[in-house]
Image (cartoon, helix red, strand yellow):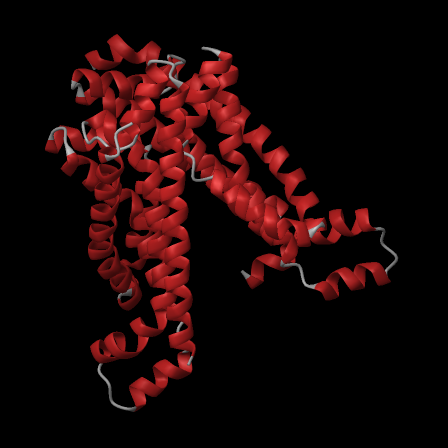
Length: 198
Length: 210
């Protein structure tokens, strides 16, 4: 039982979430402010989701070779959908009266976005990040097939050597990780929601 | 061209096997989920406890289901189908349950007032009103299942995953693409078909609201 694999898995997940936010948030904002590219952006992230995770990693391995970078790039592409989607929906569903008020006060579109719309859409955006995080914890088991390590290697090894204990250890670790993140992020989200509704 | 000469037949078989796994397991999963969803929506006070527990099981990666079943059942297609069906249940179950709970109580009251039995209310009022949500769940299940069916190859049971696994192991890009592209296309076509199905099933009055 090697706990360093748990941290390796955690590292893959956190890096993935970090980069998906860095890429996904601007894409969601872009979809919101420019209707002409909205369809393309939303369609593209949805198409990415239809490619099997393993195949996606297999394709990226061609370009980047085996290793953690490949895994993180693949997982980022995979977790864009909930983040981009929720950012767009969150911004879109900000009360139009409030948007008007911002306009009436002479705020530019950029100011409105930064100081009115994004803060109000934050709970929705954060929900997207939470979904992406929990999904990534599960999908990251594929990391091991492209040389990225993580808990997937325990599970694969367990299946190959017919060792039930290993499979259960890997699975339990994954489940606990997913539940902890879920609970923690729901708690943060509730606090965010309380702040925005005040 | 030579790629198709060498692998064409195997690719067609793989697509058929893959499609077979997806259709069987989604059908089984859908039926089970629909029944469970209806039952749970009748007992919301218990469902509030049961649903979060089920969603914890959803965090188990599909590979673990297949792996554990493989140890017990061995290398037979049932292993793959059961694992994928279990995985296909949750999105449909969740959407059926929330869809049914979202039906406004006044509609159910109205149905009662018209003299409908609980069963009639379910089939003629509640399920049609929940159908957009159920169809969305079915679409999600199907797309996931196409993706997870790749794992069948991990235990030597064919499908498009075979090409992907061999491709990754032997560093052969063509093989990876030969597995990835058909499965992505399959997911897209099936989700379009489900949209078409939705057009027939979702009541006319609900579409304008959407």
